[in-house]
Length: 252
Image (cartoon, rainbow, N blue to C red; front, side, top):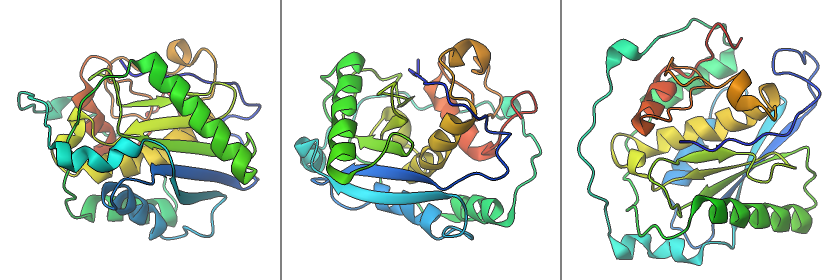
């Protein structure tokens, strides 16, 4: 299942018409060659209104996971049966987008294929990975004077469980999330599109649904094509979320 942890915030996603600037800092391992992360960030960076909205995205190479640069040398791919998604379960919801959001969705759909990274060897339990990300986040915030009001998205190439792809609130105290960019689910299709989705969706989810009881209050165990789908039973349903890029009527 996808592990999700939250700290309550005073405002909900639907409320703040006069939202102050909200910075999202995306960290990538400095040892990792340019590719998936940069391609994903480029979609956000070149979307209409990127520099005009209250949510600002920044990409930072940071010195963690020195082994990330050796993934291509390992050339290790996990054996997985081919999977298909039941398109009948893709429930599309209408939603009013502003021009910048529509432009981002357009670029998202038109993006070219980026080669997937080898999965590598998975040795670290999830709890240990979450603690490691907590330390990475604390060091980065301290070194750069980043307050807890700003969101971090840590790109990782290490994971210990094939059914975990992302986690919000790895620090619990501060808005921090992680995404594994060489997960099994990234091996087919356009891997950077999943990363683009979570780069943009996780910080917004933290603003709107940041609650200690998130699982019981907001999460969907049945895939609806909504931001709050857990995709716990089948991690490949994450691709349905990227196709809809939406929030269901219940969560609006």
